[in-house]
Length: 376
Image (tube, rainbow, N blue to C red):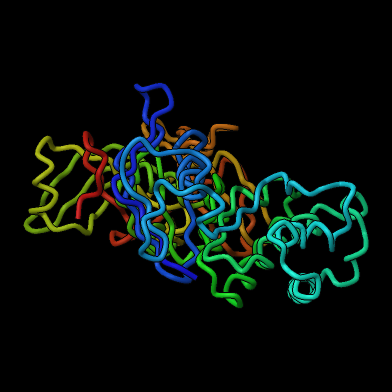
């Protein structure tokens, strides 16, 4: 087990566009840290630099307090788990898991002991004599994990290890990885573009965009107190609703307007006044938009209902409002017009219904219209 530190890391592949820019991060001993962001944001590059697979242009990398910036991969005492498993098809599970130890001339008895212990942890004991082609995708991924475990490294590095699994198996395997990491206590750095994986697995999440860290924090911190519009839109499913509106004051209270109605804001008037131009970007998560049976609230016309049993996603068409979506393969925060509300009840909703929606002031996020940073 070990702590990991990046200090001012810069990485450029063509001399102009930086894959990482002044990347600084500290990961505590035994932590499960997830690097998350859209494709091309630099998360896999950071993992490769930590593994020693690529050199940094500038900066330092420390593992357990030792500067490893110029050390080769074999001298860093880390183990990687890849997306494609990278198993030898002609070898048995036992041989695949013990191959790295064999190359280090570890005695056969010690290899067998470590492989069998890892197989028990991963429930692979009955499959040790099979070859990879006789295993399911989830079992192959566990073999790849087992190969990393037997090395007893200072840190596990995982580069989108669940991407090749189907949705149900992905949910099952990610919980297995979390339990395994908690049992072993090994520092783990996990790369993914899936914010749901990040929220459900991590102790610490690092949100990245264009090679720059946007925010570092615990899952609850990023969900409830995003630092900027990008983090607010990227974290959460469905994504946060956004709309622009004026800032109005009545004494010490601040208000904006949406759908012709006045909406109370929680930030203090002096914080809102600091924006300066009388308009801001407001955000509210679909989970925090509540159906209000009284005459209060915003009267919104329902355009579409997505029913997931007791949970429903309500779509409201509204010019000037938008919600964050994941834009295809790029997995970046995009925008789609309208508002979404996520409700859990037994009410039957139909397109065309007029629904009154309440926006709790304490759940409305206020962002500067130019910097896109949150207003305290």
